[in-house]
Image (spheres, rainbow, N blue to C red):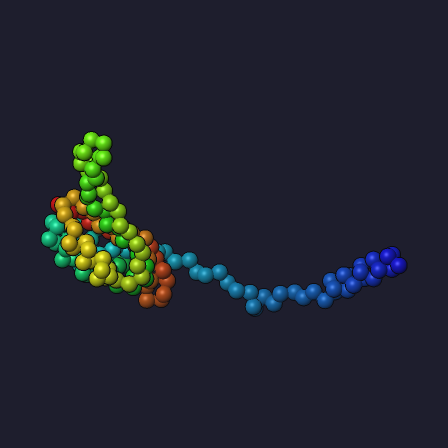
Length: 158
């Protein structure tokens, strides 16, 4: 009985091999065409690249939209970015009572530009010299919808 079952199973598998079909070469999908990524620049108002600017100017540009341009001057749509605010603070050593300078970091990701009003309000009230604003992991899409990483924008206040 087992021998008959194994024989029937082998015949069934051999029969399936006869029904296998060849792929039609006209339906084979081609790989996406490789493109050379454009040279991009990230900009906040008139600020480009990493800059050291006065606190007053930093407060005014916070309300501006983050923009990305390619080498030909075409504007790309910013779809995602991360923002980090590195603030100078002090802590008190409980044993000695001395104040120790340190930093506090606030960071989040955003899908819309400019920064939300809540963030700009807090930063504008606390911003002082020697603090840093980072726009990083910026993703922008061109007119064809292709995503590209844009360079980091770092602003240090003086």
